Length: 425
Image (cartoon, rainbow, N blue to C red; front, side, top):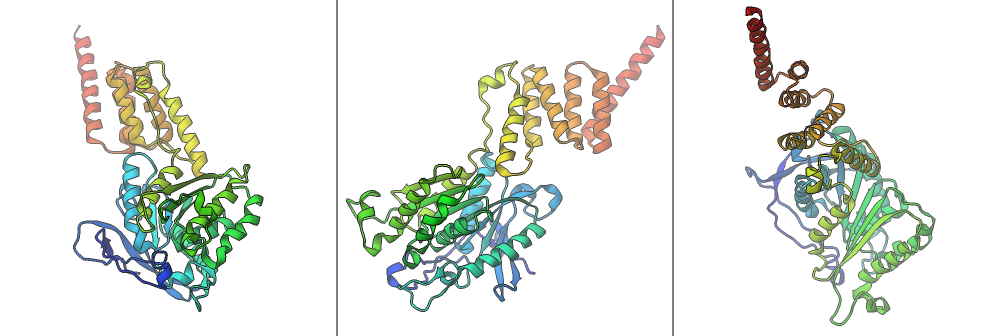
C-alpha cells in the first residue's frame, strides 16, 4: 500500500447530475502537490471484496502522536468522513484546534473518497435521476465490515467513533443512525438530502424512532438557509414546492425525533441563517464537534486554584470519570496537565494540594520517571530530603533523566558532607 502526502490547498470542481439538484450533489476534489510543508495526512488504498474494487482513504493521525501510527503512544477516537475529498482538511483543522484548546481528545480522521457518489450514498431511486439505483446498503456494509476493522487493526484507535456526512452524505448518516445506531457513537448530518426517494428515510423514521433508545448516542443536524425572502422555518413547512424539499424533510424528521422524550439521545440541531448549502459544512462541522465533546473541557476557576482547601485532585477524578463514561472507556487526566498544576500549586506555597496532584499522577502513570521526579521536587521544597532521595532514585529506575541524576547526586553529596562534618566533632 502506497502512502502519499497531500496538502491544505484545494481546487474546486463541480459535478452536475441534474440542474435542479446541482448544489445538493456537488463534490469537490483536492489535488495532491509534492514538496509542501502543509501536510494534513496520507492516502491509502484498501481492497474491498464487498464492493469488488479498491478504495482510497485519507488518514490523519493526531499531531500529538507525531502524525504516525505507532500504537504505544496512545489510542484515539475516530471520525469517519463521507466525501473525504471535500471534508477532510476542514475537519482535520477543527480537531487539531480543539485538541490544542483542550476541547476534545486527539482524534484520528478517516476520509472516504467517493467513486460513484450518488449510488453509494443513497438507497432506492429518485424520479429526478432516472436509471440511478442506490447501493447505499452495500457501501455501508463495506464501511462496517471492511473499513472500520481495517482502521482498528492498523491504527491506534479506541471504541468511540463519529460519522459525518454532508448533503447526500448527511442522508447516509441519518439512514445509518436509524438502521445501525450502534455502528457509531455520534452522528453528524450537514444539510442532509432527506428529500431523496420521496422522503423515504423520513417516512421510515416515523416507525423506527418511537421504538429506539439512544442512550450514549449523540446526533447533530445542520440546516442551511435556502429560503426565499419572507419565508422562515415555520412557514416553509406549509410549502409543497421542490425547492424547499430539503429543509422541509429535515424539519419533519426533527419534529418526529423530538416526540420520543425517553430515547436518551443527546440531540441538537441548528439553522444557519447566513449559510447556504456548500458553506454550512465548515460552520456545521465545528459546531457539531463542539456539541459532541461538550463534556470534555475541564473548567477550573481561579478561586478554586487560590483556595488552599479546595480539592483539585477530587475535581480531576470526578471530571475524568464523567468523560470516561461518555466515551465508553477509561480516560485519565494528561500527565503534563497534572504535573503543571502541581508545580503551580507548589509555586503558590499550597504544598498539600501539590502533593495530592503529584501522587495522583503517580497513581495514573506508575511507570513514569517524570512523575517520581516531580514528587521528589515536592519533597525537596518541603525539606524532606530522605523522601526526595527515594523519589529521585525511583525515577531513575524508570528513565535516565540527567536532571534527576544531578539532583540526586547533589543530595547524596550533601549527606556525605554532613556526615563528615558531624564525625569531625
